[in-house]
Length: 191
Image 1 (tube, helix red, strand yellow):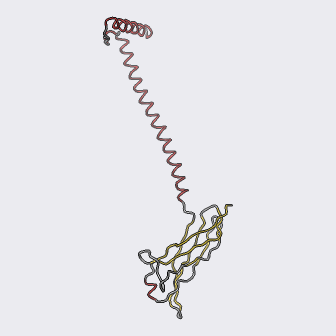
Image 2 (spheres, one colour; image 1 turned 30 degrees about the vertical axis):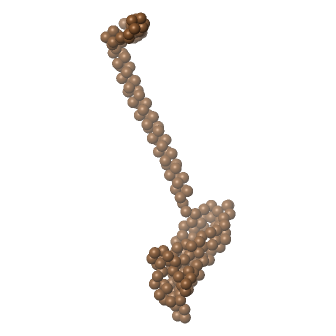
Image 3 (tube, one colour; image 1 turned 45 degrees about the vertical axis):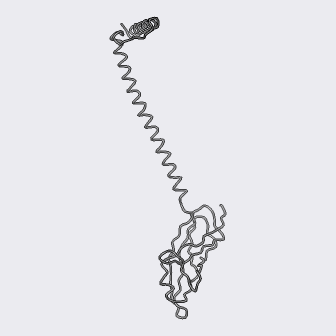
């Protein structure tokens, strides 16, 4: 008997048992009532279905994971661009001794505009700080050291220097361990 005949025979048996069980008030059906060749074909197709499902799940997993990897890559690139600071600065403290007034300090460095906008009206102010990052006072006040920058084009790097930090006593500089930016503001004009 061919495949078509086996399926028809199995269908007849199922219909016979199904409809007869309604009249008897119970439903009984066993695999022994289905011809042996039909059971083999059902088992084979079942295993083919399982392997097909496993293959489908594997392919879906590959597609989903590659999509997620692509999304993660794109988001990480966006995050890198978003995290980039609008400027890069390199600075250090300079000191000099003037016989009449003692030692003075200032901040000298470079500033790079990392944006696509030109900056004007730059206001960059430093304060010298102690080891705990607290501003160092001189004669009861904290001097603001303003950089001599006024404008910076997009992508441009310029050197700057601040005013001198005045010393009243030589011991004022014993406390100085670094600097921090007190204020950094600018106006921008998009190109």
